[in-house]
Image 1: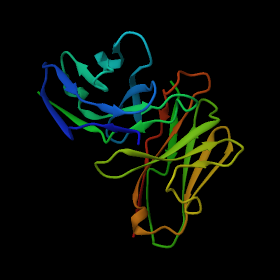
Image 2 (image 1 turned 90 degrees about the vertical axis):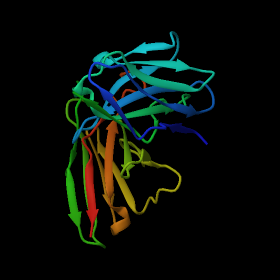
Image 3 (image 1 turned 60 degrees about the vertical axis):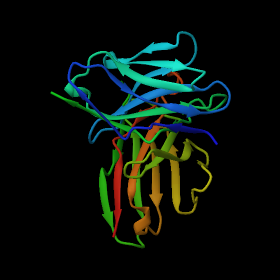
Length: 115
Length: 117
């Protein structure tokens, strides 16, 4: 079965410190990988995606993610966290083929950045 | 950017009644929309793919007669929870595909929280 795992329910980081939100996946073929962010009382917003090419992809708000095929991981990172980064982060994967928009989401990781 | 709006944001209903949730693309036409269900502290579960002018495609395990989806126009998809029961209480989220937009970059509504008493 195709799945996405986000092993941490919550990540706590001090402002200014680097942050990592982990994601691993189990999908056949060559999937597309995504990160979305959900702020309170708002819909999910696209952050970044990996399709092919450079394993390190850069996205919105200074976030980046590293694709590791051997470890089937796509961890989200940011060099210096801001309090405003506090939100719920979802990793998602698209199996590809004809269903690129049909996303499978992880359970989400709540990021809390403390002043 | 593309905006998707859901209405109502929250709704409380009695068991046995039906509830309709609307998903609108405000500044673009969406031939394809998706409906998800999100349980507390759990992932978004894809319920169905809504295609304008045709029947929705439901994911395995989702009851078609329970969750009626209608995509009658290019800017509106509706989800009707029929004969709602307390176990249907959940957060329902829709997303829309921007035609010509990058693959996988969906635009999401704010979500609708349903509570069935």
